[in-house]
Image 1: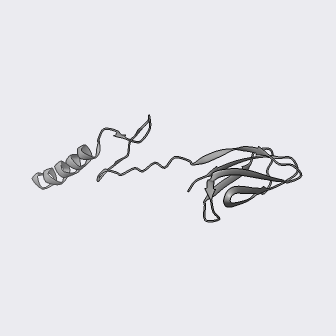
Image 2: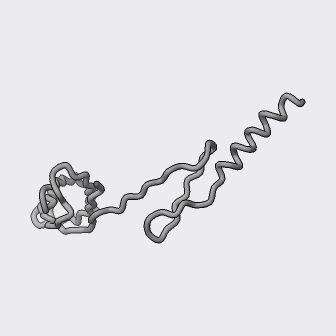
Image 3: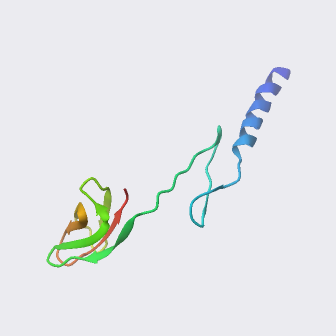
Length: 110
């Protein structure tokens, strides 16, 4: 019985140290991360630019200085129907291709 006391005490101590208060992130919201081995480092990167645009004949172009080149990571989704979308970031613009006059939601992630 005494052999089990120490391991149980250690497990309880680890669990207690992992319960930390939320970490203040940049902005107005709190960010918390808890694990059995302690707190975690959480980094939040705000989305540089995002929006919606309607296609005209299957194409559209968003001109914005937040798009800095073809290495930008962008997410694009057709919110009108289940159709494939092509997004190509460039310097100062995002070229979007899709179906007809669908509406496309886009966001530059990095």
